[in-house]
Length: 94
Image (cartoon, rainbow, N blue to C red):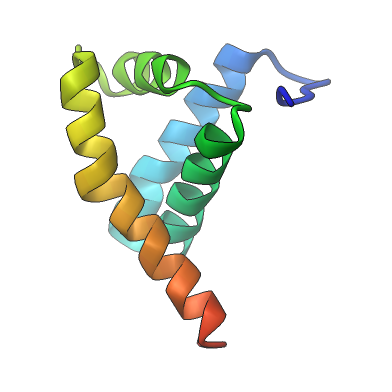
């Protein structure tokens, strides 16, 4: 099921999402993990494709990651952060 956005475009949402991820990465590790977990869940559910996530990431961060580079980033940084967040939630630590 696609995201149902009523007050912003998908591109505006993606830009806001990645900017929030960028800020949380340095200041709020719990929020960073929560955002990563949310992104992985949306990709897994098919709401967002890897191409859409990579394209918006590249736009916001001024990068030009290839599909392979995105997969490496997703599996080595984004997925583990989301997994740590989900594990803390499951343990009742949050």
